Image (cartoon, rainbow, N blue to C red; front, side, top):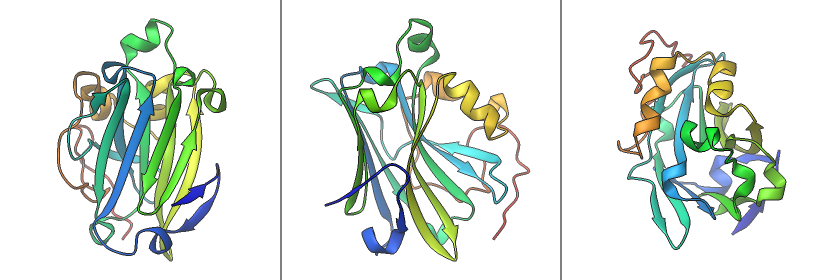
Length: 194
């Protein structure tokens, strides 16, 4: 398995030549009830058009939270961010992602790993960016937000109704829809930059 470093960008076809593309996120050392793992769907201007849960619930085993996603690049446009965030209740209690023992996002045959000291006091973290630039590419981001989900969603111009349901949800849904489709009940007018 190829190890990606923070900021590294590669062609998606190099690590996941087929479709659908499997993405898995594992976080060790935090309870699944404290974590939300989801995909943020963006248009061509990096404005949020929706959120999608993992293809199953976020599960916990032996102190590890795990979420799985299935991406269909043929049905996507814009950008998809794979995000891990603390719940607002956990954030209010002083918990943050820097408390994880390990955080690994795997896409196809590549993985991006961080430990708590790599993260700091961030409460929301963009793990991977999957985007179209001539062809589908993946970036190991590692961009964090100390202010948690509200700070991150503000940067991407997301309406509160688009993401508030994540607080009571642990996943759901199937393959990710195209970024122009809103799964969060917010603004239905997202652009489809083709």
